[in-house]
Length: 313
Ligand SMILES: Cc1cc2nc3c(=O)[nH]c(=O)nc-3n(C[C@H](O)[C@H](O)[C@H](O)COP(=O)(O)OP(=O)(O)OC[C@H]3O[C@@H](n4cnc5c(N)ncnc54)[C@H](O)[C@@H]3O)c2cc1C
Image: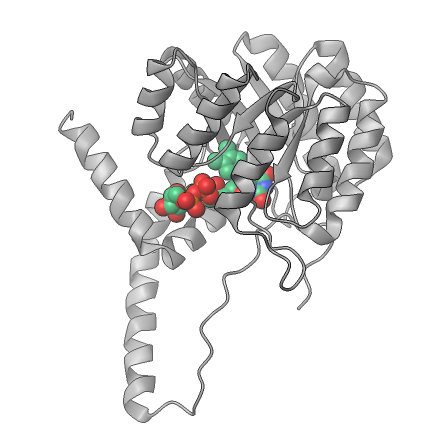
């Protein structure tokens, strides 16, 4: 089934295709694997919830405040699910802006334009309110097929909020990424640079590592501010080093729940304060669970990280 234009759920990871009719032994092995996987799912779900800043805004604010006491800035990122209405999603964004203004933390609100149906009236109302409260708003990025709708949404926001209070996510893997980067530079928006979870149209994807650094080249010395959002340690360090060498304001932005010790240490050694994106809402735990299932390496990595924290190393 085609994903809806308004879905914010990341694209599914394709299952490997079965080329020939599976033998009885292969089908039996698959049934055992599926049973084990269902038993394991309960455990994984508990670990996955560890990735999340909670279901409610209040939970995420507690995490943000804990981050602040560890000298970390934050981002509040609400993840919707089909069970939320647009009205409810909008209320959550308004409340997040209100609470950000009141909490005294260095935090901002990340929004998902597809969840708001790219409604220009909501773009205007939210940016007016954020401008009044002097709270920074940022748009997450989604599929390439809705990138133009997202840009139109952003253009409406720009009519009522300063560039200093507005941010755009640039996924570097698309053919259109360089044009979007130029747009962000021209309008002096804050940029969050990511590899991008959604692929470009068939066959047009750029090599993510090379594209990441080419976008850093493009932004260097020209962008208002760049958040380097990658957990790939050598890549994130190279990007930040280059941005700093060109006197471009920048920071590391990392995802709450993923191991970040080395990048946080590196940031501190550079007298930089990393920012942690705190996802909250019913939409995120299933995503984290999917990531675990498709990336067992990550479970190992996270396990090692938790263990070293437990034994204090
Ligand atoms: C703060 C932040 C905000 C983001 N916002 C967006 C957005 O708005 N739109 C968008 O398309 N993409 C977004 N992303 C995701 C991004 O596009 C990449 O898909 C993701 O970060 C993986 O690339 P990498 O460079 O971090 O690391 P890789 O080299 O691909 O991975 C390094 C390690 O980190 C793990 N890892 C990294 N990210 C995740 C994750 N999300 N969940 C589980 N494990 C992970 C990997 O499994 C791997 O073990 C964001 C990422 C971050 C950190």
